[in-house]
Length: 246
Image (cartoon, rainbow, N blue to C red; front, side):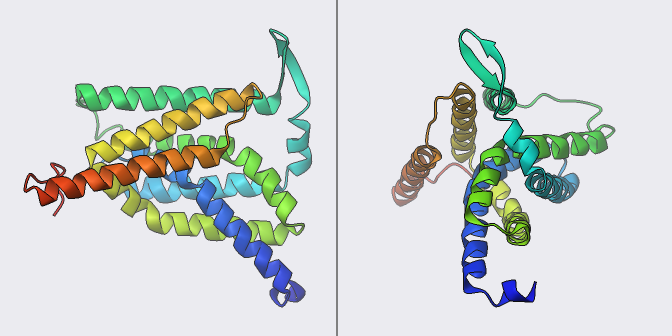
């Protein structure tokens, strides 16, 4: 263990993996922000920490189950001449769930939130529902990143440390990201559109049609940059941005 602390190659692997986990965790943070916004304000922090904490444990568990994960790539069934493995089925179900969640949230933005008189009574159960959804979706997002981590680092200690550091970082920034999205309805629409694209990409990946994630991140970053320019333009013209920004 002491040898790892003094090994420059080990530190390079650790930093590379931690940065990779943070970048790949962007979609997870966006999904978390959308889900947590549905909870009462006093329950949101617990849902963020609980969801990310459970997601961290599931990622570590996946690392220790790498032999089992490799078996998920073996063909399991055939549909319309398309062979599907257990991994493909997980990606398909996860992608369909993201698509459904994004569409329902977009519909809620258009039609307005539904009023539920039992909201306080059901708050605790909703927190657990949010935590479980975050953990389940994180498993879908993490399947391929786990294989990447194993390819970049041969020591399980380095991979676990990188996951812990990346999740702790996400715990610190999750509230800021949530507040940023909630204060700006147009940004929230972009975030939901991003999740919708990720869902479509996951479904396509399940059918062995691969869309590089870099393209999706670039599209989202480009759309966000355009929205920032539009907001500044509205401010400069004296019209305000209409999102309650100070």
